[in-house]
Image (cartoon, rainbow, N blue to C red; front, side, top):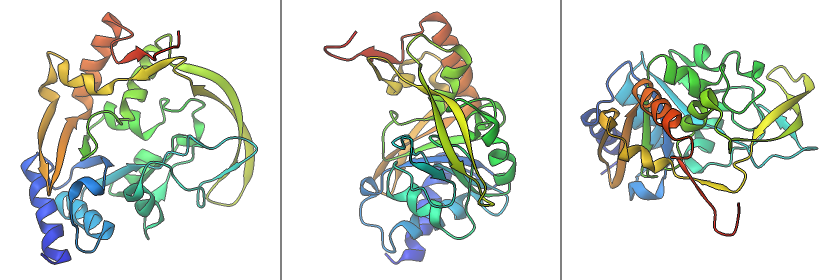
Amino acid sequence: MNPKTCAQQIATDLRKLGILPGSTVLVHSSLKALGPVPGGIETVIRGLLEAIGPAGTIVMPALSWALRPPEVFDVGLTPSNVGAVPEYFRTRAGTRRSLHPTHSVCAVGARASELLDGHGLDSTPCGRNSPFRKIAETDGAIVMLGCGLGPNTTMHAIEEYVEPPYLFGPDVTFTITDEKGATHQKPYRTHGFNGFAQRYERVAELASASFLSRGHVLEAETFVLDAPLLKEAVLQKLRDDPYFFVEAEVGKE
């Protein structure tokens, strides 16, 4: 299989899971899980683009939560720490990145400006201007491409509606350099989790898990979640049981 054929297969597999032309797709990924990919990450990106067409939008996390002051978050230079595919996507021509020191997002496509603009106004990781929250409030699919259901950052955005007791940690002041090269400082309320481990794979246990479909893209087990329906189901569960999506870490209280 050559790169073009592989990209077409990725697009075909995604369409079987409901990713159609015009879709807004937030992608979490494991390159290794896909198996051999001729052309590497560029083939993966081309397959995603082919699936959504020119009217669609691809979004990927560009998280840099490992950043600690006095390090400067530079929207154009600071690498992400969530894997090879999103880091490649971040540096790919035409990709834009939102302005946030720990939970930025990259996007390309029809809705990129709508989703990214204004993120710099937030003072929490996934506040009301976060692309994660915007997708959950409007329209979009979350694609967990070979990485299971655990690393789903949209869950943080949903948690921020409810603010369960474990969620927030200390305030931290970050130094930020924006797209124009201007630098400023801003305090942020961080996520702490305070002795709890995330168990976001438990979304599959919800009675209303009709928001979830499962299949394969190449060799990767892939989950697709309808973001607005996920939001409603998770909010209902969090209001019933604020600790459902976490568990206490061994040896911690």
